[in-house]
Image (cartoon, rainbow, N blue to C red; front, side, top):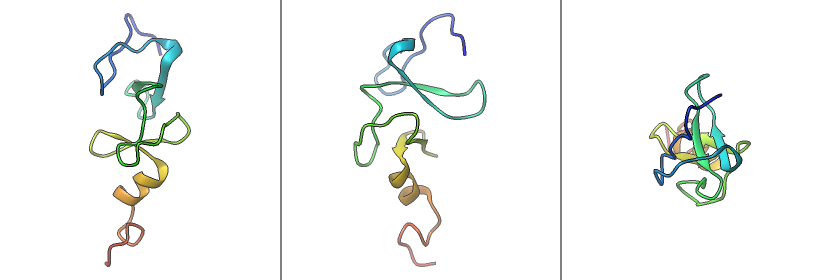
Length: 81
């Protein structure tokens, strides 16, 4: 993915340069970019990398376990169906 200028990070609104970025998946061309130092789980604040980062339906980022608890099937979240 090529940028004419460094994209802005959604959380801190700072510029993200290639050497300090983490990509959050999505459709091709719609990937979100994050700083390494700012990419942490919105729930447990665990540092994230591209392998364990999940895009939440609320626009935030989560680790895989917190994402499953928040957005997973009702039985997995601990709710009674």
